[in-house]
Length: 148
Image (cartoon, rainbow, N blue to C red; front, top):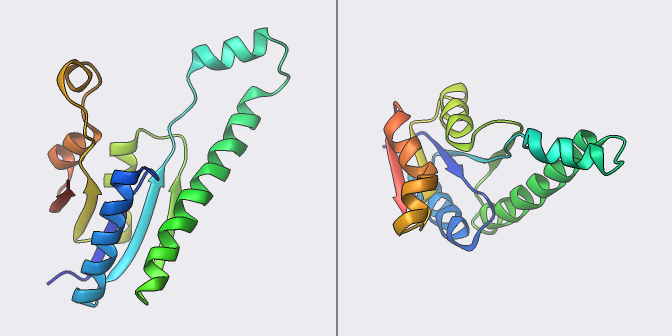
């Protein structure tokens, strides 16, 4: 049924459950798998604060830290795929809003399903911050499987 599954992760415990589910589904479907993590741009306010504190190149430091964190997240997800014998492509999308990066990667890679975790925010946090999962569900031209 599915030929190429995009599995989105941020490295959280809930996202790890979605990775396991997505990899198992790819295995069952004999589908290709792409695992993606997205890191957002650094806040201009934080950048300015670090510069005022004398940090000569805070942006480069942030980008290095974000790349290292993304590598760690993707390496853990790749281990899950490897344990089931599912080959996967690993993608880090830097400096982008997560929902936009996930949907754009799914389109670029020709995926026919996105698997991701529900965010788990409730109450005021959900209203004020919103849900990245909801943004993906709303904006994706392909089906989205949400793992709770």
